[in-house]
Length: 213
Length: 189
Image (cartoon, rainbow over all chains, first blue to last red; front, side, top):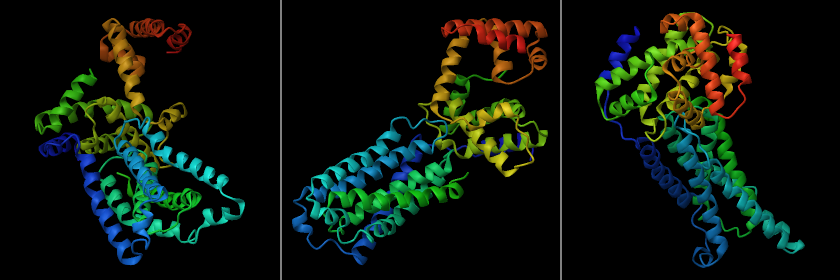
């Protein structure tokens, strides 16, 4: 096709575009993903049995806050990565910060635990299942975020895919935290982190293909 | 003469508001801007360059929601062009020859730092006399050869060389660096 004809054809279809269309698309996709994830959790795993009493412990809130911070931080970074020519700047560090804080808290709690209880606070009763549940519940937000990112323009598709996967992992882990009754901070720092990073890694692998434009 | 950041950004903003005529003008400007950019980087047939320019135009149009109006337009559009070029090179691996001294540019990360650097450069360049500014723009930024630039600017080749040399020296002085580098560059051209 001749370039002048192409330009005429493209320019003919010039509809107004909101400067926040990208953010709106991502933020519209997310609640749907979270809702599906929550429904799957309730039907499949159920809320934790001690929900009413656990609510009054700091670990309960830490377990919600950590994945939520990962999800929000990665999402904020992702929104920069899908715009060509925009430096993510401090958002890269903000996205990494929850991991650093949690690693320190986990190490401190592990160190403070009596040696004979260390295995229990670290491995709990579900260390081998936790990352897989996190990964499974990440799938709905994963699909929602990938669909939204595909409409944008990430110039580093694998990196954007990793960050989208990480955000989905954070939201999936947030939903899982309402079901999981582990209380160890080292447990949270290890196995939740592993589940979220798995989702990120899958995002990176798929992003290379799916987020090309 | 290539349109400036301010002009292109103005057209882009009007296009985003739904102004088809502005969008048409923007795409036409870009269709003039990018062939030299790609030609310098892909030492290959002109057919590839045309394909690539069209791909950039389509991306600029269909992905225009990803432009953030608080950012420099050139940072956005060159990031798209670089992305499309890398993609193009990957798809035609083995067929496209990239000059080795351009390999670093291909690998360079595309960020607003580039845009900031670009606008800093714009500001410094504005302080130069028009002849020096035009000579530097054509040879150093657009990547034309001295003879192409001389034809385009209607300046003799030696005038282009002298203007590039003096302009780079003036820029270096403003950046507070010794003028050694532009000197060497000036002679090499």
